[in-house]
Length: 567
Image (cartoon, rainbow, N blue to C red; front, side):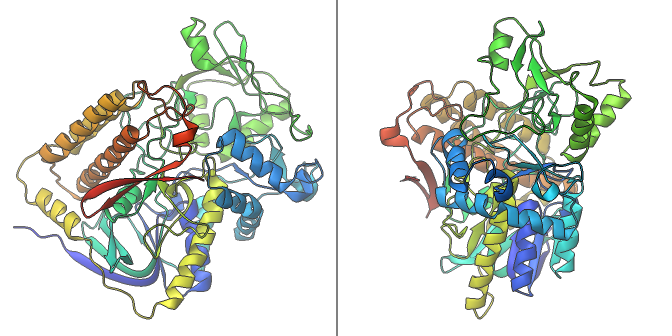
């Protein structure tokens, strides 16, 4: 009988996840503590949502917004009302907005180019309209932002444990004691003992059927499978907002690489959305060099929607970048080159003989996501502390901050590291902890199984269950059926793996099932509908009197409980 090998590691601070939040956390932690380890499922040079680039980050730029009559408080209130619809961790959002520029300047010190001679703005910054009513989204050269951050991590002396997928948390006397991971290449269990842990593993992708039908053909990195959220839940950490979905969600390229925010985001200033008749559905975001007075920015909307035009028989829907000046076109191509998946998108266009000046790009809805506007994850306080003492969460890992995206990753990673370093200073000895037993048994069961089910079958079943019971027709009875189906899958699947790569995918199925069950339970518990992010057929009305809250879900002694938190 085979037994999986266990390798021990120790550190004062363990950062889990090597994306934007994880790298920033590791850098700041190492500035404050000389015994820091960064554990990443991939490699920090090309991992996380910014793996292939990032061309934008929002913040408050006093020399620009102040001159245009917009205060920090007004910008934050705009975010609260128009992006989060009031349901947001207000103190954390204010911290993100107030300190984003500081972290942007850190990026510049690390080597990122953020200033351009053609800019007429103070500091030679390229600021555009994107998420807020004021011009506060910085465009910069971020194609290699992860390489830049990884170099800064190494320069600080952080030990990097790459290709290790964290599956569980070590706990001792009700407090964090470290993490447990599986080596995706060496096939070992890695037991990492630590005084403090920062979780930054990001989103739970691959829950829903991708439009192309291919498992990995999704907008966000398919390696992000809710590993951190599943591990935290099993350790008794309270998660919030897990029922929320970013649906009807984004639209993106139907036949090419999916990403970049078509026709907005990196496809500005030329990008507009049109129907098959050439009628404009979605105007462009902004005019380069234009100004606005807060509250009077011109609307981008036309009263129409992509989905509405499609259902009215005026589809297909297209992104049209064919107009605009040569300066507009040049700016757009520069932005696409620096945004995630952008270089690949341009490569495919060149290969197929496509030209933005001549060809429109057909759009189609992407699969739902538990991210961005959904903001599901552990509830945190104003210091990024979760409900498990010594465990901190940052970026997309944390719950309750819709639309925090890149600045949330940078600023919360920094703050979580400061909190973790302070805790580490207060603890004399590195704890031992427990928590690896279940994952060791799961791995050993697969390694000692003769024959069985390939992970691909479990993945397809998860796609079917989550898409059928948790997207367009959500209700208590549908969610109950989805929960029963996931329980049945977990109890009957006999996964098999011939190598560490396949066993990694088996472990991902375990986490996706856990996340799916959390989502269904929260869907049943929240008895209302709430804007676009949560629609129930049996409770179609929004109920602020009872449900204007973060809905928390927690596992304790084998029992699940729910709590309401008014932001």
